[in-house]
Image 1 (cartoon, helix red, strand yellow):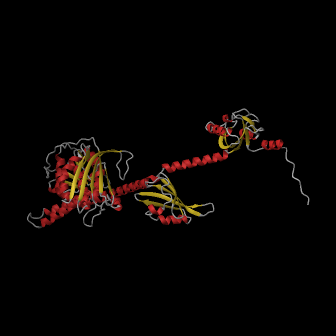
Image 2 (cartoon, rainbow, N blue to C red; image 1 turned 180 degrees about the vertical axis):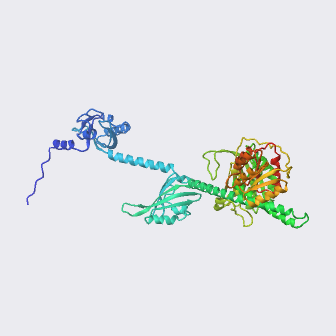
Image 3 (cartoon, rainbow, N blue to C red; image 1 turned 45 degrees about the vertical axis):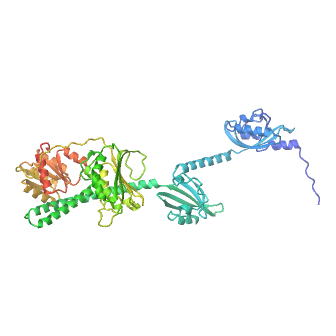
Length: 633
């Protein structure tokens, strides 16, 4: 077996010169002043400069201005010590003005007799740098989102311990990013329903979405399995978004829609119920008149009338809740009203409950029906009393408040100036379920037979009818506070116009056109008017009434009509009858009408009689309209 001799050593200068000339990395040699004394051919490919074009140029002249101080510092560090080596990354300017990123390794060979310079070997790192920069930008954007949105991002290991936590949403929980790392999620958050079950599902490889309820806050949460490079589940990745405010707004919209539906229902029920009550009151009065004053049966009839009156009051409460009850709003000082009621409220509360008032001086004027607002205060105080059977404290406060556009809290009023009235108690507070249904009619927390469930619903109707808002704030074991906001007003009270005392009976043979679609009410009204001495022409609807008016040759002095009639409205009917009998006056009957509608009717010369009414109230109203010289309809 013959052995081969090693190849002869290459010619050093030619061999290494060829390597440098064909090297992919750019090689520059710098003198002590950092001027370029040599550039390899690869500099042309990397930077675009022709061969030897950079000779004599200071390397810092082609370094990015932002990187130049660091590059100069690295050069000084290397150039001052023989054999020193340094690494750096800089941006260099290409000949076309663009920039590239290079990774540099510098070595001090200034004392080497064949080199006499600092050798800088550089390779293109632009692609890697751009990738890293894009990644940094992406991370910054993600961090900006995490830090600006109500989001919590976290991860858990197989045992449910936090391995990462970040996000602005942590602040709402009193936590800092990373604070819970190493702790078990079950330690502080174990009260979240189905928490363990959802984590186990994620660890089993499932992506889980659910609503996490923690205290008073709600989070839309997603758990996903964290998988390593081998495809093995090693933990859970999670994102939670705080949706507490959104859910509050959704609940407000839902509550508003529900209340509007109940409004319509209450108004519809009250319409029919008022007609029945009017008939009961009328027939009871007619029946009572047929008995001798000493007849004991008159007491039974009186009981019927009292029951009907109670039913009428119940109907008024329904209409007030539905914001359809007629009111007489006037400008008033809330403090005066509270002072006026204080003695009565003290008696209502009894000896075991103390009443304290804290009234801010110079509260703004508000416009509301005084008796209705007294009803609001009385209902709130009665509720407070019933919540504290063993005694306690009730506090009534007033103050002026400005509500801004960023006002927070449930059922906050729209922006503006308000007088805020609060009624607080030291009772046990309300459950979440009670707070959710508090202002709904017929909802009550009292025992059966102890409440109608219309007290707070009535308060709601009165306050909202006045343009205000009412809300309750309560926590179990910490009492309840009702807040009433009444809008500030600049209006002044309207002075009452004097009028003559009405007479219940006809002065002459006056004719009344009576139009009512409810037969029981129409019959009672017709008998009442005939007994009072009026000639009565009656009809069940507007079309029949117009026909009768056209046929009636003698004057018709008064039209008494329901506002809501089949086929044609009461207002249209009045217009049609006036064409045939220009001097006719108008008395409308109605169970509800808002203030604007009432004022519009009165501006047209019409009077209003509210249902349910008694026979005497009808006779007096008819006489008042006929005797009023200012009302020609």
